[in-house]
Image (cartoon, rainbow, N blue to C red; front, top):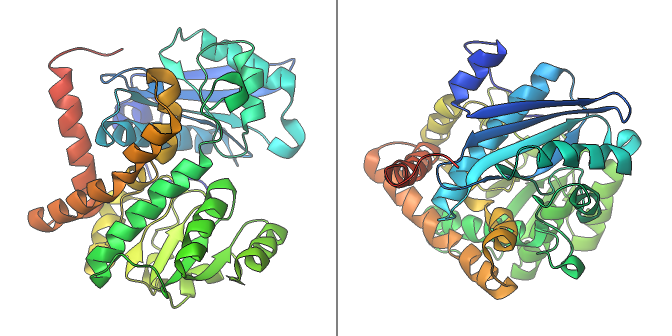
Length: 363
C-alpha cells in the first residue's frame, strides 16, 4: 500500500501547489529503464535530505502522489528534530527485484548530481547501502553510505530506536507508565526497521503480533522473536495495546481505523494517516493516542544528517533519544490546544521554519 490521498486538483502543478513544493524533477533514461521522480518540498532550513525508495507503483500518478507526500513529511521531520535540513524524497518506479541494476542507479545518481546539492539522497524502501555506493560514484550528494566509506551506515537501527522512544512516550501518556513489559504490540511490516524495533520490544518483554507483505519474512520473524504471525488484513483486528505501522503508508484510513482495538498508534512508517485532517481527529474521537510518524521515525534522518553536518554514533543516539521528550511535548500541546497530535506536530515544525525563514531564504 502506498500513501494515497484524494486530491482536490489532480493536475501536476495543482498537486505541487497543494503540497507547496519548491521543485519536482522527473527523471527518465531509455537505456537503463530509469523512471524516477525527485520531490523537493522546502529548503528554508537547508538542503533537502531524504531517501530514495524503489517501488512498483500502479501508475505514474500514484508515484507522484507518494513522492509529494513523503518529501513534505521530510520537511517536518527535519524541522521538528532541530536539524538544519530541508525536506526532499525520491521514488524510482519499478520492481526492485527485477529492474534494479548498477547502471540504473548510477544514472539516477547523475540526475541527483544535476541538482547541485539542493537534494541529498539516502536509502529508503527497497534500497541498501550498496545501492548508495553505486549512486555515490556519480554524485557526492549521497548519505547513508557504509561506515567503511566514512558514512553513517544503515540508518534502520536508529530509526527503530527513535520509534521505540516515541512509542514509550505515547505509552506513558496512555497507560501512566512507559514500560512496555507485558504490553501487546502489533507490528505491521518486519523489514529492516521493523526487525530492529522487534528487538527492542522483545528485550523489554512485550507480547508481539506481526505481519508482513512477504509471508516467509513474517514467519521467520515470528520464530525469531517468539511472536504470532497473522495475515496482512488481520493485523487491524488484533486485541492489542499498541498498533505499530512499519510498512508503507496510509494504513490509518476509512476502512481500517474503526477496526483498531488499541490505545496507542506508534510506528516507523511514513504518512500513516491517509488524510491527516480526517483520520487525525478520528483517532482522538476513538480515544487512541497517536505518536506523529514524522516525529518518532526521525532517527534515520538524524543518522544520515550526521554525514552532512558531522557527528558520531554516540551523538546520533543521544539526539535520537530526545524523541521521547519531543513526543511528550507534542502530545501535551495537542491536548492543550484541543487538536490532534499530527496537527500539533506540524504546527511546531512550521513555527521553526517560519522563524528561520526570517533569517534566510531557500537553499
